[in-house]
Length: 131
Image (cartoon, rainbow, N blue to C red; front, side):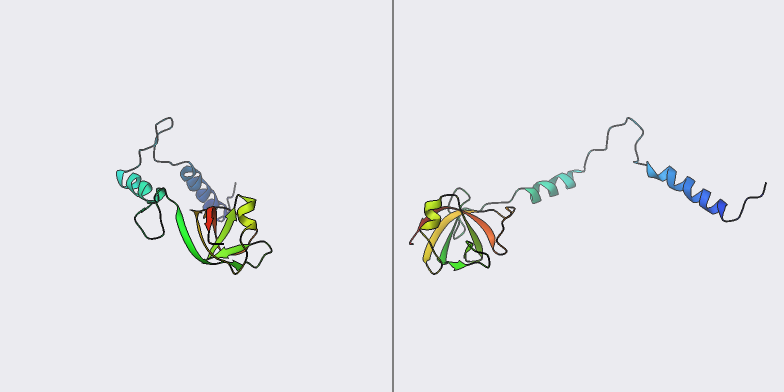
């Protein structure tokens, strides 16, 4: 029986890759290694945003206050204030403001919220003053 030269390297490569495919560094049935304390500290530091309630524009309770002139967004019905997309849960609040109004709003940023407006960081408005 004659084995071609190209078959041997392929067979060797397959054997080596099969041995490495399931190499997790632990024996079967052994518990996974515990994460290092540095990894735990880094995870805790990056996962919990700090709220500095003493910073300007940040009242106690994690809310933010924005003041400025409302502008229209590129999509109909989208209102922006200082780079933030205003999200109103109260229809009466939304109807009380329009582009060009000088207002102060209090609320919370909602960075992960998806919207149909194509600009501005979503900002959930809890109160409006000065419209």
